[in-house]
Amino acid sequence: MTTQAALQLANELELDLVEISPKADPPVCRIIDYKKFLYAQKKKQKEIKAKQSKVVVKEIRFGPNTDDHDFQFKLNHARKFLQDGAKLKAYVFFRGRTIVFKERGEILLLRFATELEDIGVIEQMPKLEGKRMTVMFNPKKN
Image 1 (cartoon, rainbow, N blue to C red):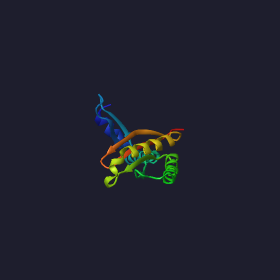
Image 2: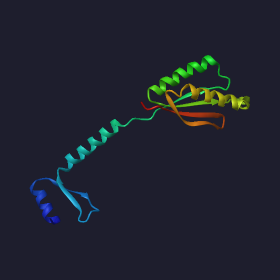
Image 3: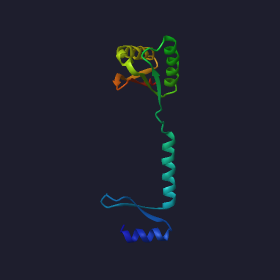
Image 4: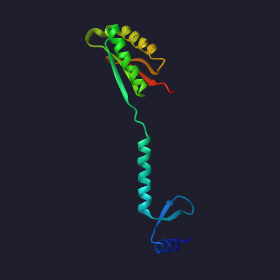
């Protein structure tokens, strides 16, 4: 069908001639109500956006000399975060001269990882970035 004939048919039906695929040979066009088409497209985008899950990253901070009770307390919080489906970033913050206890921080984070291995998967091994030693966890898929 020629472009003129398609435009004439669209005018007779009081609808719009919309080019769907301009790169095709010949170009693909459709006779539709353009406002209705835009509304349906917007509704579809909104539905897709509603179904998307946002990635939440929760953080837990330790010191290199964190006591056992504090460790257990923070471990319980970490379990709750991972069960809720959030990513977890645990880090040891070295303040001042505590940077000399790097191995203590690493041991603490590795112990934390072994405690959480039933509920979370370690994404990144302990890594020192400036004054922080960081480890990342993802929740295990059920």
